[in-house]
Image (cartoon, rainbow, N blue to C red; front, side, top):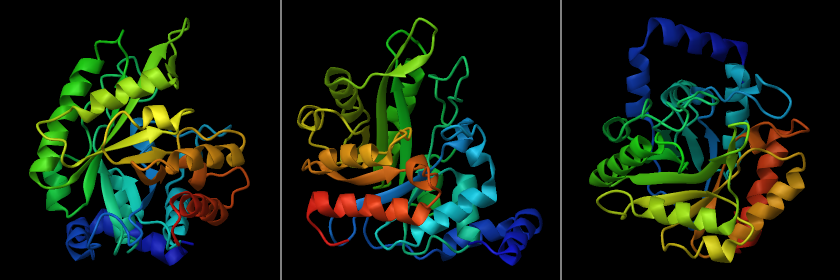
Length: 301
């Protein structure tokens, strides 16, 4: 729980000592390796607000309360099974100022320009971290969202931007986490995720081929209905994403578990489903996800 004193200190440093952020980056104790001792990786994600996606379930402003979001993230990070966090600079820097990221894997979110619901949503420009800043600030990699919509020309600059980011991160020897999601527009022009195996396999193949080298590329994929089909598409390491939480957390956990058993999958990247569970118990939601990972990979977490 963030105390009132810690919150006042954070606000003071934000306003009156901006240089403390660079010092916090420099002082952060980095973990020696990306994977933990069990060769898995469990991250919590909090990059949704930067593209205007603030809603969770029936609350359209759930993620708009920054103190609450940070509290939930720190609760998740307090579980030793959680390896780290994925976020935009504002969230990462708040956590740094709260001394919450030592010995943690930190992945910087890169393209947040495709604002949720905007006419240009698929033209997802790189508006947050870039490869150079990720390297300079001592982060462990960068994440990019790649929404593929064949009927939307905004897909083209996003593809090009992701390819460039993969190459630049590789030049620094840093993970390039690509999240390829195939979408179509329905009769109301609403974007609908295509969850069939053919669409997900195609998206995975496209993402795997981005950049001048795939040496540092990881895929971040939704849990498919046919893991053995989709996850056999490439030899790249993959992480299962949480996605939009369903009304039944048990169903979410079960779907993650099926995918986690595939040999290319190394872990989980989950945000809203764990940070904003229906019963409000973040610690219990994180513990349940950690148990699913432990059971699926046959390791002690």
